[in-house]
Each structure stands twice: as C-alpha cells, then as structure tokens.
Length: 372
Ligand code: ATP
Ligand code: MG
Image (cartoon, rainbow, N blue to C red; front, side, top):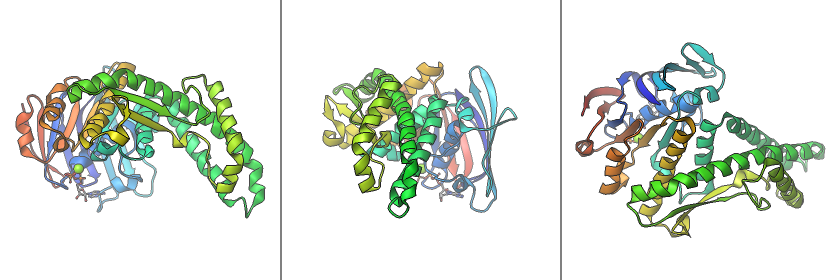
C-alpha cells in the first residue's frame, strides 16, 4: 500500500498543499510548529477516519476556515483509489473512495493501513496500561472490522453500566437493567479478549526478531497478555471466555455496587513487555523501553503485511532524534519494504538517507523537495 499523492485544503495549518510521494522513504523536514505532524496526521486519517491526537474532527479544520479536505491517490490491492475526506464544522465527516460514499470508517480501513509511531509512543511501555490497550485496539480495528464494531459496542455498554451503578442509589429502578448490561458486556468482552489474544500471539511471532534486528542483539523481547483474572486461557473459544467472564462478574457484583464502578471486564487489560524475561516497565532503561516500543510497532507492521499481503504505510513522527546512530541508520535505511514517512527537524539527518524523497515544510507550505 502506498500514498502516491495528497492534497490538503483547510486541514490544520495547511491552506493548500499538494505533494507527490516516493514509494520508499519520505523525509519531512522543518522547524518546530511548521506542519510536519499535521501532514502525518492527514495521512493516518486516511486509514481509520480518526486522528491519534484530536478528540474531535473539528480540531482538524483550519482555525480560519469552515471545512477541511483531504484528497489522496492510494495504491492498494493492485488498484488506484482516490480517497476523499471532507470535514465541515457542525457536520459529520464525509468519506469517499473513487467517488463512492463510504458509510463507515471500517470501509476506509479496508483500503489503506497505517502504522504510526509518535513521540508519545516512546513511553508506550513505561506508561499506564491504557496506552498499550490503545496500541492493540488501533491495530486490531484496522485489521478486523468486527473488532472495531465490538469495541464501539463495549464502550457504549461500559458507559451505560457505569451510569447505572453511579445513579442507582438515587434511582434504584435503574438496577432492573443491570443484569442485561452485564451479560452484554461479558458477550462483547469475550470477543475483545479473543481478538486481542490472537493479535498478541501474532505479535509474539514477529516482535522478537524485529527487536533483535533493531536493537542489535542482546535481550530477548517477550510479551504477556493480562486480562480478567478468571480467564485461564485467552486463546480459548469465546463461549469458554464468556463463561469465565460471567463467573468474574458474579464474584464482583457486590463490589461493583459499592464502588459504583464497572470492576469486571477487559477494559483494564494490559500487555506486559518483557526483556530477557523481566518486566521492561519495571526494569528497562529509557533506551531499552524506547527501542522495544518501536519494535512493537514494527512487528505490527509485519502482521499487517502477513495479513493482507501488502505493507502498511509506516509513519514515524519525530523519533530520529531520540535514537542513537545505529538505530537511526536502521530506521532510515533498513526498512526497505513498503512506504515510510519520517519527520525530523534537523537538516543533518538528510545526509544519512540513501534513497527517497525529502520535503521541506514551513508554515503549512511545501518549500521545496528533492529526490535521492
Ligand atoms: P514539532 O517539530 O514541534 O513537532 P510540527 O511541524 O510537527 O512541529 P505541527 O504539530 O504539525 O508542527 O503543527 C504546526 C502548526 O499547526 C502549529 O503551530 C499548530 O498551532 C498549528 N495548528 C494546529 N491545529 C491547527 C488548526 N486546526 N488550524 C490551524 N493551525 C493549526
Ligand atoms: Mg510534530
């Protein structure tokens, strides 16, 4: 998969931009606050109709305009797709592929996949479990539309059940529906665990080798999936998972009523990363955990490839400056399959790129570009 060209109008600080990309490495260079991340954000929006840093689509619309447009020519499954996204204030986003209107983000995910690594991801392993769940969710949502639907449903049920638990002392009648919500949460939760467990099993197939190549040997990367305590084997059939989730709910029913919170379900899941058998979160050095975080994303990229037969577009925002020379070299020149976008501030990094295209961005405009 690759993005051949993009045009942006009214997107963030881009009034009007058109760029033709290289099928290999594209280096986006510019000072701080010029629009490098905004460009990556636009590309990643094409794969999930969602931004990694905006909560609402309206944040993506230029301050002084009423609508934002992204248009892109994308190669996928041996065909060209003209993708179009329109965001307008006070309206729901609109998506098209080859002129046909798309109803869901999942239809867009079916065309192009992206794997994004941003500076916040450097702390993926040290941060709380929510970050790691998000990593899993972002990947699996792109790969499996059914998971995206289940995740949306689970979140709705979770919010609803939380409201019931919170308000039940004032309105005991709300408790009439509690059982039903709990059951539906267990059913949807079993699906989430099923998909997460299978994705993590795949990650385990690729991540150790990727990590060895990227870090230059040494430690072995391992992964451990932590979910609801009654689940004995997350890879078990969903009906087994459902039964075990219901068992957990039963023993936590009183505690939930007292705490007025959902205490049972996979919304607290975690992915533990191990380096040479020890928790990276607890014992890993800064450099080790950063490298491992990037290895996970690169392993996800392999999964996408093996799933669809095509490399997803890799978006690396501002990571070069955080890596040592050897790892910079790996990122710039060792990822030879698939399209890569890399942003950086320092000009000197350009010299190290052996093949690809360099774009200079200033104030939301493309100043110049060069190919090597
Ligand atoms: P850094 O190197 O610091 O990461 P960057 O080049 O990645 O910088 P961006 O995050 O792309 O910078 O942001 C560029 C500019 O876009 C910022 O000055 C920001 O204020 C501006 N900006 C963000 N949202 C909007 C918006 N909706 N409309 C117009 N400008 C915006
Ligand atoms: Mg940036």
